[in-house]
Length: 118
Image 1 (cartoon, rainbow, N blue to C red):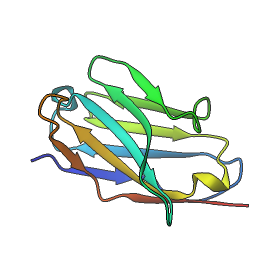
Image 2: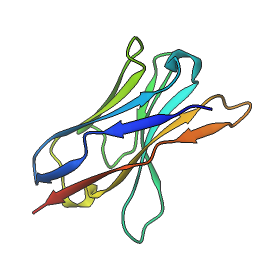
Image 3: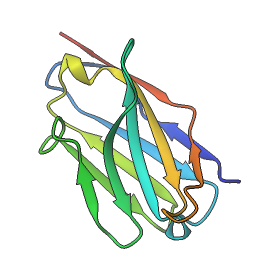
């Protein structure tokens, strides 16, 4: 069992920045993929960004160039730096740990609210 604890959400104005953190209860190098998802009211959960234990990253088109995912393998923490925030970025952001594509075993954090006011 892997516990994921998110923090860093809050209320920010349009154009502002926030940094989300997700700390895992285990060595994140043992986790194949760490992902950030978000879910806005009335919408399906969408993948925002991911980082693999091989060092690769990927982003949704809607956040490319504004968001940056990074990791600190010593602290077992993954970050999501969000810049130039827009009202449409308002959502609950969830951290996800996919152990491997072979097992598809995954774990979720409790979510953190991000609200961008115009």
